[in-house]
Length: 197
Length: 197
Image (cartoon, rainbow over all chains, first blue to last red; front, side):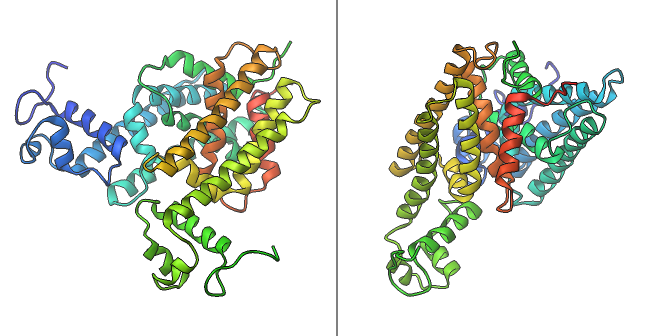
């Protein structure tokens, strides 16, 4: 944190501007938010904001990259763990995606609202689709290897699993305990609600 | 269907106008859609559209009521079924909410995107919250009665369960088979992915 790059006036480094921008985009919508709105939120003039960030698109790209980089890194880590079977690997991937969502909640929330209106958003959707494909492939692999039940359609299962994870952006607040949440999601998904006496 | 009320020019009854409006609201956003856009989509002039519907708000209210009425009726039906224990009741409620979502997909999709910008939207959010409370209460009741596992937080469980169901609006298309989807959701939620040899 000590070497954090600063541009323009003191009091706002690029990271803190990005945090405020993501929060504002999530609150009032990316398209509906102007650089003037962001300047007002930061207590800056509209011209001073450009000392901190080159453009609104740049802020969106930074936020989306934060979320996508974290999700990809989490999957890479699971893939690199050699002592897990396909079922444990899937469970670790689900847990990892919950942890990323909780730890990068504003950025992931913004990512999930991207609709592909600009080239940057289209690129984000492509990367998101690659992640979804990797997850679906892990479900298919685990079902094929007999590591999870084989009677459910893998693609449908994958969409429901990660739909459940992603739906957390609708109600989760910053104060959620990541371990409790991750345990609940994985228990629900892998062990189910039914009580086994 | 034979007694369907018609207003204005032949070729568009109120139901078919509502279908087109919901589809348009979901595609380009309710706030961003004008009555002029809707008229164009229907091949009508902007003045002719008012022969069919009094206002844009009226269309939103009709769509939201369709979704909420169906969700409430589904829960009422489960509540009126006396021969189920609390776990079976919850399973029936989850299945019912999937069936409503599939059968009223455009209306439920629109409902879930409502953010409370107008009095009609605020009223919809209140009704939605009542439904969420009923579902959370069913989870709490089932856990308390020992009908489902008791080691998970009931509110968190409820949010994840119905977050999984609601997330289907992100990818489900009209051609989904309702029985397969409902079976997959309930199996995943109640029995889990783990294979029991």
